[in-house]
Length: 137
Image 1 (cartoon, rainbow, N blue to C red):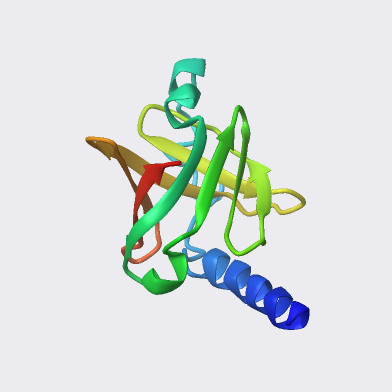
Image 2 (cartoon, one colour):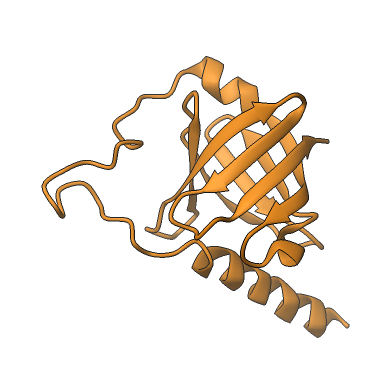
């Protein structure tokens, strides 16, 4: 059973990281900067997302797999996971975006976010339509 959980956790991480696409270009590769990387974050922006948020409903690729995943924001740190698996990393939060870069990894994933009442609605950039509806835990 432990082996099954470990394999399921690894597969979950692979699906989460590969499902968001790899079309991002770093600044300078095409002579322009990514619009979200040039925006500076404030402490106010970070505190809006501070805490744990659970995906209650997901749309797009792997929607069923994403439901139940918890994203936890602690200052400049962000971790997410479910079922005992956690993927730790760092984040930069602005008034409408946040990033995730896993510890020990060069890839940076960008998300757009907005609020619909008490629900945090998150869309992964370049993901082909992955949208998460999250409730604060």
